[in-house]
Amino acid sequence: MGTTLADYLECLAGRLSRYFDVSRNEEVAGRKLDLVGRFKVRSEKYFFVKSLTLFAYENQEIVLVEGDKKIDRSKAEEFGKYLKDLIPLLVKPSEEHMSTTLTGVLVAEKGVAPEAQVWVEHFRHSQNFKWLLHGWCDVRLLAVDLASGQVYSNKAGRAVKEAYRVLGKEGGKEVARPR
Image (tube, rainbow, N blue to C red; front, side, top):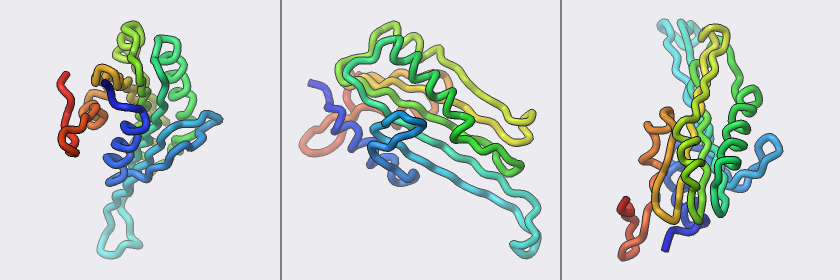
């Protein structure tokens, strides 16, 4: 028996809460999401005193998680389009903006269709702002199959794929499920 959506979201919220501001059931651009995480870091270099800043840059990541019973190709395509459409709404390019990463996670309780898996793995989207002078935005897309314990991702999502793995319980302790 697979992990339930509620259990997975609770586990994921715990993982993300160390570094992200996490909210549940948030509406983003007219779409209700099960979990949203926001992380932002600002770095700056100054000369002797903080008022003499030489340069500064900001990086951020926004995680958007949506659960469903089953994920088919049309659901994956529609979510991918939604992520692309969010870029002008969530990313604020400026001289100090370096990068933003949108991480979209589709969670399926009863499985990810093979054609959806293939589509997710081939999905790509990146956008530059003013020839990179105002930074860039990359979109990661992951599909989590709670029934089989598998996590599928596009190339950009491979770096964080392990963080979204499905865990089982063994004697009250979380352990990675066999693949």
